[in-house]
Length: 253
Image: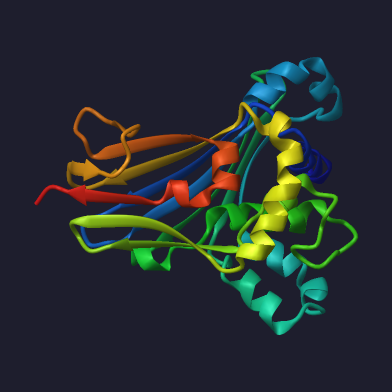
């Protein structure tokens, strides 16, 4: 089982072609809710065919908590700086659901948690890459420094900050730059990966208790009851121009 989890993590990290990243948020009227970040590599499984099945002899359908991973890695985590340990502790209440089935060609990873206030939501891509680094890195390299992990190299949270607000009638998703110069260096190196990531997408799926009156994105798609909105971006847009994913959603009274 552990061998197959490692195979799955490495697959997520190394084969990002034609994959879908989704950010789902469910907000109740009182501002509480659930946020989930998912990675769907099923298309890669279909392309890999039987070769993937030879590596993974048993299917995976497992749910576990981030706290379990932190406990398992507590000795190595204790060697990190206090600041790095605090960053990891932020994800303590997150859960992970992993699926890999070579017969049905399904490969998915979901990281999710609940919140009491929209402003408490964290950067979910950071949560997924942190999980990837903890599980796939057997040499105990400090978190965020695993340059051999392509998924880690896509993490831009050291240079940007994603925040969310909700006041009952308006929801916002806002990206602010922390280190523009550092981000420029990151994006310059990422341009080399544009061919590999060219067909991958990043979807925002937001679900509300009330119908949506308006949104500041012309490409938004709504559910029949207008309580759910979906906006899809090329993954490279998410990486090279994160502010393009800023949203303001106005709900009906």
